[in-house]
Each structure stands twice: as C-alpha cells, then as structure tokens.
Length: 515
Image (cartoon, rainbow, N blue to C red; front, side, top):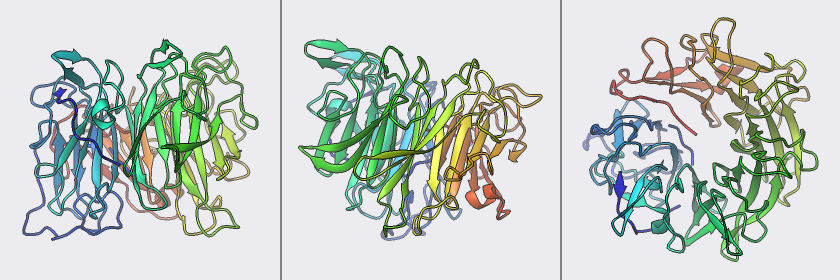
C-alpha cells in the first residue's frame, strides 16, 4: 500500500499475533473509562486480550496485504484491523505485510493498551516516486469501545517518525517492533530497520541496519556507528532484525554480523533505557567470540536471529535488577550436521557484566531428540519468568525454543517446540519436545514448520502454526498453553484460535504468525 509521508511523530509491551471488518464491543456494554494494569488490554476492561496476526492475508483483493485480529478476553467479540480499517492513513496493497511484527503498550497512559503493527514491505510515495519496501508502522489506540474502527490511528514512515532520517527503498522499517514501559513508567517503542544503509566516512554499507528508539520526547536513530554501540558497521549486518526488551533493558540482534572473517556469524547488542546524550546506554555486546560464550563463530550461524528477554531477581535484591537473554542461532552447525541450530542463555547485570547460564543444542546430554540437518533449533526463542515477585530460580524460568525443521518418525518438517528450564544445572534433565499431536493439539503434517512462530508471557506460552497443513487449520492456527499445563502441574486446557471458529472469520492465509 502507499502511505502518506511525513506523518506526525511521537510514540512509545507484550504482543501476540492476528486479521479486516470490525466487530466492536457494543457501546452500551463498554466501560466509560479504561482500567490500567492489565497488559494487552485494548478495551481497558481489566481482562487481557489476544492480538493474532496474519501478514499474508488478502485484504480488499490485495494479496499478502495483511491483517490483525484482536480477540477480546471474556468472550466480548473479535475486532479486525487492516489498512482498510476506517481511519487508517493508508490503503491495503499487495505484499505490504501488515502484521509481520506486532507489539502492545499504553503510549498515552489512558489505561487502554495500544497496538503497534509493523508493515515492513510498505511502498511509500514521496515526491511522486514509489519507494519500494520502505516500510511503515501503525499505532492503533485502544478505547473503552475496543480497538479498530473508531480508534485514533497514527501511521509513521521512518522519516515521519524521525525527521533526521530518510525513507528509502528496502529499509524494511517495522520488520521488528518492541514496546513497553521503562522502570520509571515512561513508554518506549523500538522499531527495527534492518535494511537501512549506513554511511561511514563517505562509504555506504548496504543493509547494515539500524533501529529507531522512542522514549518520551526523545527519538533516536541508532546504529553500530553510534558511540559505544558494540560491533562495526558492515554490509549485511541487519542490525535491528530482532528485538527484545524489559522495563530495564533491551537487545538488538544482528544475525548478519561478521565475526572476524566469518560472514553472517551474528551478534547481539544490549542496552539499558537510561538516556545519555540523547540515546539509550549501550552496556554489552555478545557473539560466539565473546569470553564465556560457548561455541565458535562460523559463517551462517545467525547468532541473534531470534532473541528474547525476561527479568531476573538475584537473591540480594528486592526487584528484577538483572535480565536473562535467550539467543537463537538456527544456522549453527553441530559437528558435521549443517544448520541443526542451538541456543544460548545469558544473565546480564546492570554493569553490563554477563554470564552464560546455559547453552544447548540437540547433542547436549539428555536433551530430547538428535541433531539433524536443517532442524534450525533457535529459529525462534521465548524466555519467561513465571513469577517475578520472588527470587529467580530454576522453578520460575521457562524457555521455549522453536525447531521448525524437526521431523517426526513419519512426518518431515512438521516442526517442534522444545521446552527447557534454563537455570537447571542439567539442561536436559526436565526438557520436553512438543509436536502437534504430542504435547500440542492437532495433527502433525509435513511442512507445518511448528516452532517458527513463538512468544511467551509469565502465564502462557503462545505457539503459532501459520503454515499448518492439517485439515481444518489450513489458514493457520494459534495455541495458547498455560505454563502450568506445559509443566504438567495442571491439566488446564490449551486454547485454540483458528479462522472460522470462536467468532473469527473463516479467512486468511498465515493466521498465527508472530515474531
């Protein structure tokens, strides 16, 4: 789609992924005001809602335009948001990818969560020229009546959000988004721009990448060329390809980062939200050449393709002063087995000091399964602290790892989600391998690629299968599993969302996609 350039700026976290016609809660039943305190609550009724993306959906005849559906908690209906939604400063066009990335936070502090939708393949018209795949981001504000038609909607190109930058072809502005509130309560928004070209000393490095960071009245374009930011600007770094964050820290993945002579080995930069000189503070950089990080950097490892963060409370603190960072490297070769993949989990302290608490691949002792070429372990990672009110321990932290290339004995590339307790002394002691029909609902079919869409909160694990081939779910499906159910401590049913069921329209192409 084409969007207006120079749209008004000024923006600032939990997301889950959704699809275009809106069924809002009735005005008579709606609250007069929003109730703050519940994450991902777009109608402000105190009950969490679920946003589910389908970035490949056809909208108004435009293929791959994309859509997001919001399922209201408490059985209050479904809202559908796309670029065809009334009030949207844009129109759906083929290949836009509305919903490739999604986040939620309360930017205006009114008690209703606001939805952020990345549209990285948006074409932008500027001075009569079509800037292909420049990208756009939309902030759709929640209201007591719900979200969608009737919402205030703000659209941003890169230059519209940050006038110090330019909107350029193939920047992929919005490929990743992360949002939330800092420890002081200030809303923040981070937008990944992995296709950004960065110029240093007169030389331009294609696809070096950058992020746009917004907190309060501060907006800053940040790349590896900025003071203190780990890494060196190089072509194809893709800085901003992946994002993770908490109220104290955030991280930026650069899976194309070269380490020594090894191209696309990958790296991760870690920051805190403290602003200094108009920018957040860089505190550490990680790659497989970092002291204490397992493995050896090799071409194509893709360290940082996926990253996830959760708070960590040490025994000598009364709050989550530290953070646990999970890093996926799906291109990691295990011995001679190509692209079997692997994962590292690192604890980061306020000083920037870091300690690897665990690293694993399919050959780690007692880990279920075998290292098989193309399993891509770590294509997605999701780490969660299930109880941040107590000292962090093995009992409170869970890690879900996607292995979308995993085969079963009879089904190729059906995919899997591997569950770990990352603070266990023996990482393979209590791991579980979930596949459809074994730990996950549904039937395993070839090329489902289960594990390519994954996120988590303190209560639930969310597993999307946007490319499901199983009968009844060929438009995609999302499973919401309580962690207690995954652990086996309760038998709470998994909630299944799919087009054509539970008030969701029977339409779409990749329902349940999420990054």
